[in-house]
Length: 161
Image (cartoon, rainbow, N blue to C red; front, side, top):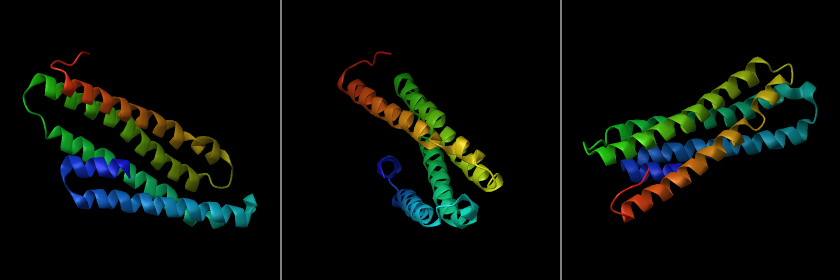
């Protein structure tokens, strides 16, 4: 929801922000559905009953990550001003977005593929267990430090590197 709000502020479009919120809520519903189904199923032999809820959860996560990354890169790349300091700051934000958002979107898509392709074994669990958390944590830390750095740069006359 935070990223949807940021994108709404940056590009001034409610439609893209609402689509991110929609996919986030679909992912939340899919995650809750998956959790409830796991409690009901309790046996790995009945794993095919998890396919639809897990697919809903994982695909919604992958789509929202891709929308966020593409929207931020596209909108920020169009905001270059010709001033070196501003363009450098925009380039750093784009680089950070690609480094975190694109990697997270790729891992979410690979998570879906591995869950569906190697579903007869538990190998997909080793692939996906915690990968989203390990990728999302640096994204939030990088975003927070980027915001703090940007705020301190706007308060001073010159930004130090």
